[in-house]
Image (tube, rainbow, N blue to C red; front, side):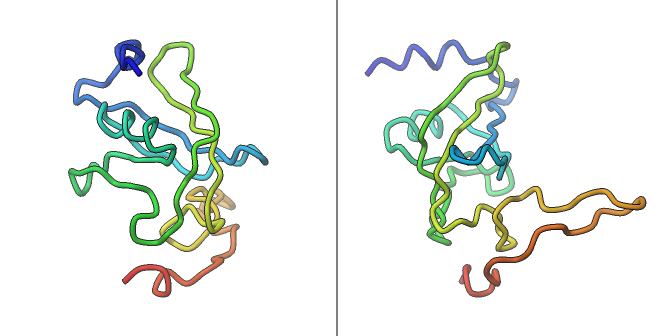
Length: 128
């Protein structure tokens, strides 16, 4: 398969594109991350989300340690070609390293960020 589709993406100056991960069945947004050309090409080739970790400065296969992989059901590019939406199946039902379904688990209430989603599994039981 030709990778000419990669040329259509408007990459940031540091060669990244923002990616939103959304559950394909419910539409719930569970994660935001970054991809570079290599991680995006690997995601397409493997069928599972591969991100670029800015903090670790390396490729990051979602679920490589936790087992909570993200199977890609559909991939969409926005109108400006600068944001990717992954419609995924979240293996294990946990996307967040805090043990929650979604990384978006805090709501602003009375001037403070408050957790509004339960921990489904203790992170100490997920990560070594």
